[in-house]
Length: 222
Image 1 (tube, rainbow, N blue to C red):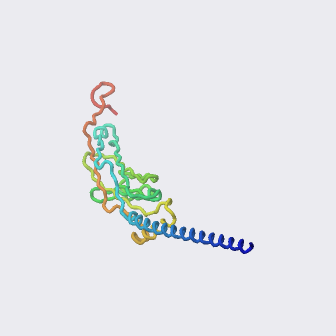
Image 2 (cartoon, helix red, strand yellow):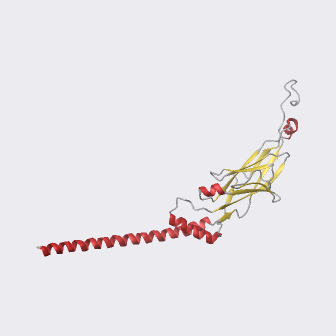
Image 3 (cartoon, rainbow, N blue to C red):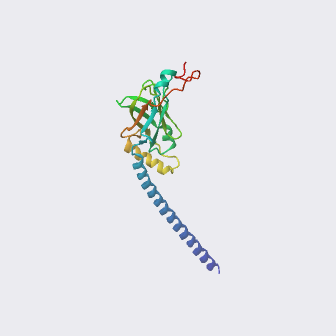
């Protein structure tokens, strides 16, 4: 009787051991498959992250009001104009916060720029122009006021240090970061391969002053 019980216990232990070995092998196989999948994913992500940025300008040609008659009579500049610049290819909140943008005039001179930690006013930029980046979205607004009619051509350029999003698994983040250092160098910077053009057309037509409030003729007097 005792031998039968021992034999049954022995068989049960062998079965439990076999079940444990099978479950371990399945877990190992699944882990190895997950590792291979993550490494494959990191290869794809690294190639995607290594691509350059671009800038979307919703209105590549913007009409500004010169308001010459108002400027001369009321001694004020024309109406300000704002052009939205949207960097495309930013992958993480850190990149949206750290992106640097620069605007050049038609001669290639820097007229405005904005980057993290920049001291204001920027001595290397033109005080007539302003570039402001929303550090939450990465989008920028280029603003200026013209004192003469004409067509003004500009180009926009941006750069950023690649930062892998924090919501990726740590294994993927580490693998992508290593691959990016190989592809982009130690600084892991990407930029706009070619500056994006846009135009602002300043017009003064139709800017007529209201009549005199006393005599009903001519412009207001100052």
